[in-house]
Image 1 (cartoon, rainbow, N blue to C red):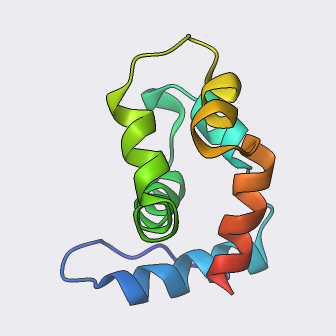
Image 2: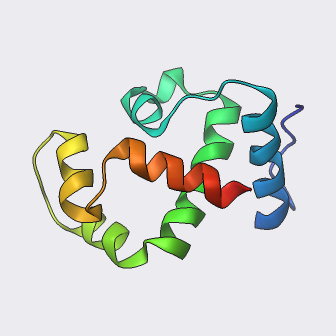
Image 3: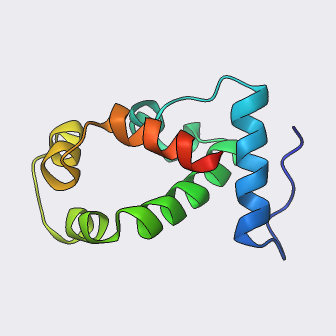
Length: 100
């Protein structure tokens, strides 16, 4: 899958591209993506992040806004469980199902 420049793309098109990335490649899960430093992220990871943000706002808006606005422990998996009521892996499975 060729990752296009993001200029002038709409979210539906980006979602189709990310769907193809997950279909054609082994893409890392949410826990792995969140553990990377900015220097480690690729253009593909950036694209997945934009679509993931859309998913969280569309399907888990209240929990996501609560997650962002409330300070918590530095343990990201614990924060996900507390705010979303789901593990990072469960959220990742919901994201992958939402892509389809």
